Length: 603
Image 1 (cartoon, rainbow, N blue to C red):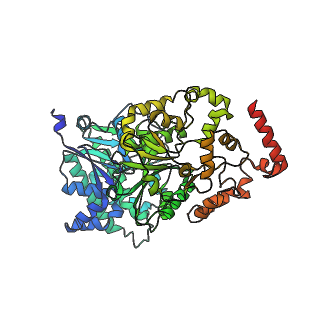
Image 2 (image 1 turned 180 degrees about the horizontal axis):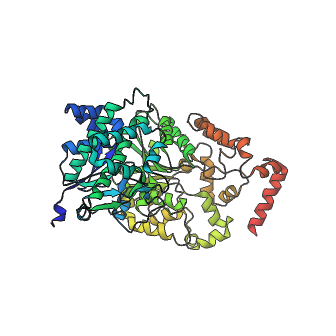
Image 3 (image 1 turned 90 degrees about the vertical axis):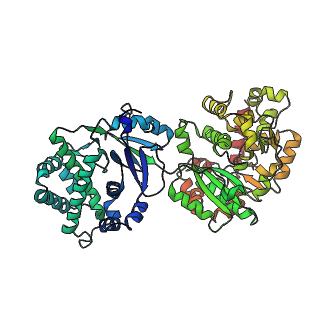
């Protein structure tokens, strides 16, 4: 090991909760509440700091590291802000770098993974500071004076403390505060001797500040009570100016990386020790309300004698909506509900630019690899209402070599059997073999071990990136990778209602006789109603199965949202308003229009 690597570098990451982090010997996540608990049992000075943790902000981590840490270099970042250590990374207009997620890919891109390289780079300097923000015609002092929630009297008090007690820094304070470059975030990396000197100076000044300014008596707002943290940012700039004036220290500058989402990685272990019905549902910002209905219907039909491990595969779902989805299962002690961030995974695997259908296909077929500890799982699309306990679906008979169980797509079968000559020609090889049953992927019972044996994750990535020859649909990818190893379910487990007279309903009637008869029989008593066809309750409230959807929807936090979107007030501004006005549903004009449309489609 070379000499540079022998320098022990510790960069502490201030966190207020568990979060994503870089995992190597350099970065050390530290939760504020753990520091507070530790300091409460320490010296009088420690207790003073612990009692004012919210006021010192991330400076509390610096204090703790100063008193109790042991390193050759001390550094400080925040759970959403790191330094980058890769000069090739492009910057934005604010001389910073933004990434949505902190994951293995972005950590590698930003030069954060290689601990040896980090230590060598850091050892070249006495101090590494963030690239400052340039206010051009305005000064650092002006910025503080005009900042919301801050009071210039506090900064004036600090300047007076420096003038009277630390006169060697008075010139540096004026040069920095009346200059144009602001150092923010209390982020830096510093050699031990300088760090100890700086920390002693910084915390002594802030303690004097408390003696001069009683923020509580001045009735400061919640944000203004964080003034010591804000003052710390200005004091760092003053100290750095002091070092630079001496011209004997090597000072490096690195850009700050701001991460949009640093939620901790999903723990993929099954809930309830694996003794539960595993359920996976894809949820996006557009399908939140439908997913809530799906989840509530599953819970209403569930047995109290079984446990259920529900995982929502989320894309663009915020914390407020997650809380609403938790409310859907409130009081259900036999349910576990967790959220998996699909966007983070796709970002890490450089698949973020995939179209929505391909994203869902990848998540569905990668699930046996992503959740390798699961033996079996049920997949339900969000637009499903469960009328029977999905435990019966989960328990369905699957042989060891069966990849999955699914219902056949009767609409697609009808297209192959004559309704769509173009589709029949495209799938000529299957038609010649008499194969009309293609699995509909909206409802799956997944035999995870068999699916891993049927295809590799690399093969899946290849097909998702390059597309299935001749098609990009999720159905085709499922049937290609699991060909010959799909057990077909009765249609009641994935009944897709179609509105009479619509093209999809006409296509279903073209399906082979036995297939269509089984589909029609399922209409009388479906177990799962999948609104993926031409009948959608939120679009047509008078549809045959709409009452099933709306009955459950009214028990979710999204009832008003869906009712409003289904009403005329919203419809008047949406697509199809003039069609509904000129050709009302049930009118002779609309029937004639449909007839003409079908005739043109056959040309």
